[in-house]
Picture 1 (spheres, rainbow, N blue to C red):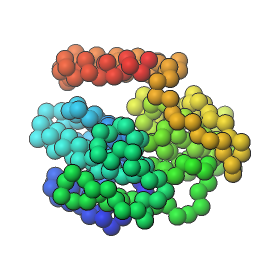
Picture 2 (tube, rainbow, N blue to C red; picture 1 turned 90 degrees about the vertical axis):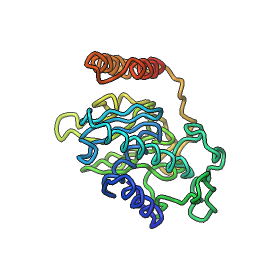
Picture 3 (cartoon, one colour; picture 1 turned 90 degrees about the horizontal axis):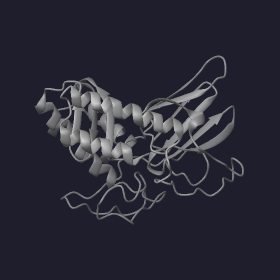
Picture 4 (cartoon, one colour; picture 1 turned 60 degrees about the vertical axis):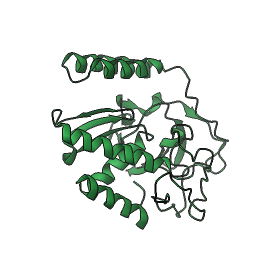
Length: 272
């Protein structure tokens, strides 16, 4: 996760105190909500009962499934974190949140701009310190939600615009991440040296993502806005059907109510 500003760290500390979690747990959940583009989160932290999922609108699943008090706390915290990142210029995609700040995105300039006012008593602050080092990814992508490296590979994930930049042996490639919420990467150490990543659909080969051609690494081709209505690729469709089967299993076990099952099922089918 990018470095928090002092104001951002204070917000995290305040939330931790109010919800009786540690700042580390709140920071971890903040990254999960960011990876879910503000509308969902997949997390795994002992203070939240292990692994769990949250979706904006009320759906919450925890490993400690019968701890209703913990469910309420985690759900409330996710809602507040969702609103916090909605107020961050350029951090999430315009239109994913119905807030009074739509259309006021100032990507690349929010360090010196006057932040917009939230409906609450406190003004919005910049949660993260803007990156100042030389960026290896294509121009125009601004600030990544997460970065990492392994051996001869490094990546930068831009969840808000559904873009993934990958550099392997000095060669930079750009991908459309579709509706994947990327959580991590791995590279095979032998054989083909293929690169995989994890998302809400499980383990996915990087090669299945649509690659966006670049004129060259220093002067990239203009980025087209992500097409949220593109038909799902074959591998993505298989992942959706697998998710539907798991959803039905959760319903049969009584973990999901009929309404929760119907809502999630409709969302998955809409991606086909």
